[in-house]
Image 1 (spheres, helix red, strand yellow):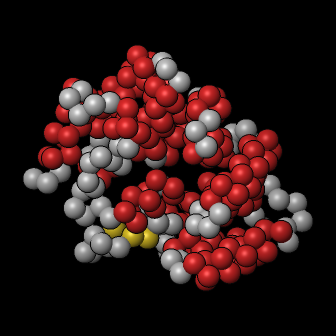
Image 2 (cartoon, rainbow, N blue to C red):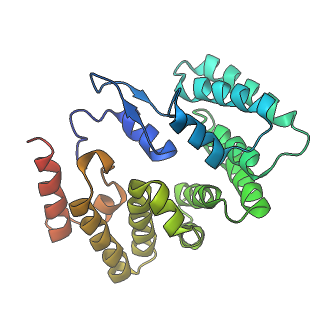
Length: 240
């Protein structure tokens, strides 16, 4: 596995993976994963959350606090508060169910149990609105985490790729890697490698700040593979 770029902490990588755009502060050591206090935050709300206005800010603030919390008991209490608000909604819509799913998915305790609940919520979100490409993506993530690669591949391939690319290019590249990984694990190694090659092409085109270090790809290909060698070279260039 590659080490992350020196300025790219695990917290930054995690925030980037789950939420998209991030803001690095002056020393590039802290992250604001939810586009805080700006028109970008407003854009995030508009894209993801259609809850009524009196609940919107409350639940996002609670969710931000929950996701960032590292003390286990407090994180559980904060999760209960988020879920309490969601349970009080009269008619939850697709975006409501999506954050419901995220709340379970990002729980640190009883991972298998909460992933099962998360999957149910993401499925409800997608059933209510099949244009909710992030709900579709997270259904795939749940199956992927459960090593149900055939089901994961089905939903990865249903994701609106153009919408994902326009919103967050790095997420689009990660999707390609995950599709390739599922093909590889299902025995379609040549097909998987084709997707990994496409990931490499995006690595060559995107600026370093828009790249998330690969993981699935490196689990499949040996260190001597030309794709891995070239990705190593590109990563090394980040240091200079």
